[in-house]
Length: 137
Image (cartoon, rainbow, N blue to C red; front, side):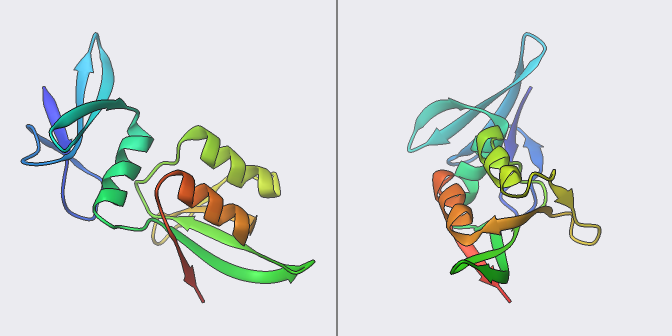
């Protein structure tokens, strides 16, 4: 069975192939396998990277940064990642290492929350997954 990532803002999969470019998942030998279709070509990917590629191609930013203080001339704050959008392990680890604390999850919006992240690190992590950071007050 093949499923594709829905075109709405939520991260949900629907039955069948997409009508255009997008992320698909199928089961191969009992394990989920992900393919991303772009400009008629198919590319193997993982779950997190595939979702981020889809969001980037649709110009949907999933990173938010809220500045909380300035230390040694550098803005330090909190990074919020939209619900249902996982980060690849290396990017998530980079954000976690800024504070040494595991990510938290918001009760109301179900966002992933990374605290004590320098703004420059947030920008680099977002850029590495083809995203931009929206600064919030």
